[in-house]
Image 1 (tube, one colour):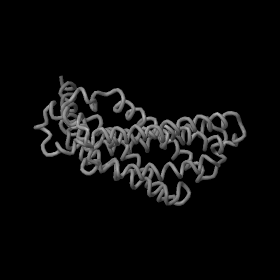
Image 2 (cartoon, one colour):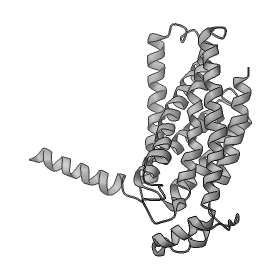
Image 3 (cartoon, rainbow, N blue to C red):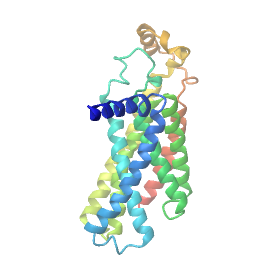
Length: 279
């Protein structure tokens, strides 16, 4: 009976505090930071036991090795969640809800973005602390813009769909990190290194070129939603249908501030990664 009481109190605490709408952003950021720290420590323990070449690496190389494992973990997590929200979830479907797509959010979508903010904060802190060994000015700029864009979308609930679309580009990150691991392990002339390069090229073409054509096309189709920003609760299905069918596109007013942040962030990261992969 006493155990049941403690369980009920714990569930109430999680529901009313940790998972309440007002606390979710901060809880998720903390979860993201803790997850990064856990992955970092587990990577060091695992690699010391199972990778013979790891202990022989310099201290800064070991740090970068563990840092890239955090990057890979985040990329797999955020790319999976982003693909789910953009292509499989009904949250952003034009046929399921009557409210504006640029203002839709959920507890899960906000939590997911918060975890990503936690990662960017941890990675930014490591880049600055070990500067310039983990990245130069372009990485600092990329992370600052990413934190601004993702945090804005997380806190306001605006433009989360487009934020997830941009974050799908993280699908290329595991391959880029694997390329660094192969190079560090002395396998630059191996067949695995060659295959990795081909996979990166294909993934890059899909996730960082073709995908952005789809993003801007989707933005174009929803520009007229600016005419109904005043009161989301008063928007009827007929009004949204009228907006979607309107052929007079106005490029001035829709509030997609996070896309304006995210695009230069993506661009700086794309250029820097392309330079690294071309080596």
